[in-house]
Length: 102
Image 1 (cartoon, rainbow, N blue to C red):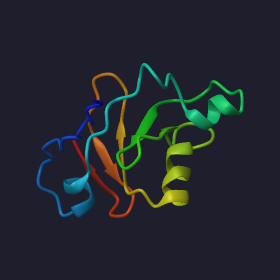
Image 2 (image 1 turned 180 degrees about the horizontal axis):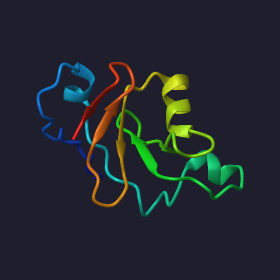
Image 3 (image 1 turned 30 degrees about the horizontal axis):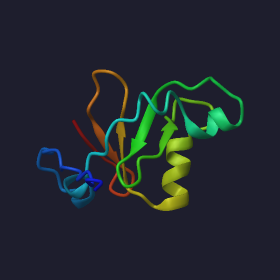
Image 4 (image 1 turned 90 degrees about the vertical axis):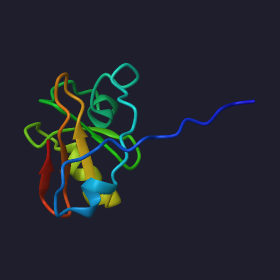
């Protein structure tokens, strides 16, 4: 019998953003996803930093990268919250409310 993994919400400082408060922390896929999914599919390897969607786990490159795939993912899916998956960073960003949570 296979056990399903439940995601646990990580405490987030009080903000006015309901999306940040409700976002579940997906497992960090850094070993499974060594880079931006769209950049890798296009054969590119130049991105600045990686962001992970907390709705579905998609990993995309940040807005400092040439293609801004994390933001494109938000515009395509309307998944509101991304988090940094860079070593030592735990902040989250809500695209809807344009709010940051450290």
